[in-house]
Length: 148
Image 1: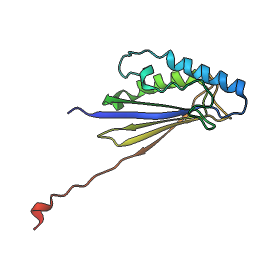
Image 2 (image 1 turned 180 degrees about the vertical axis):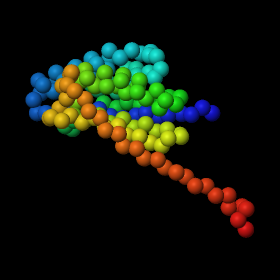
Image 3 (image 1 turned 90 degrees about the vertical axis):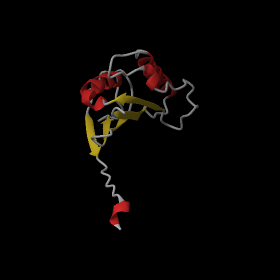
Image 4 (image 1 turned 30 degrees about the horizontal axis):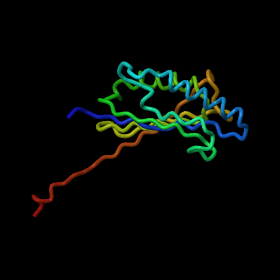
């Protein structure tokens, strides 16, 4: 079987008591997600990968609207810069406080990429910063039948 990579994560929207601003940010975010193609070239980033939250401010939201996404790829880590460029192009169009992407690979461990707004929230066209955390789990398997 080919090397599979799982990519998933969340984008956290702005938490605010300003209902008008909240509706504005959520409409802009939903529009950015809907503008993604349904079919894309590899490494794909498509609208069907993302939850597109309901506009109702009370449904599924305590204070922060959470947009989640996931996909399975064949060895996307070898094309990660291309995937990141597509994801960051999406983030540039949206309002958010933070975004987190988990990449689980079979050969090079698990990676977590985190974008956080340096101010209260990121607005479309603000600059982006990302940090990466890497963890690798090593498994040691021993054949116990031959140890007698």
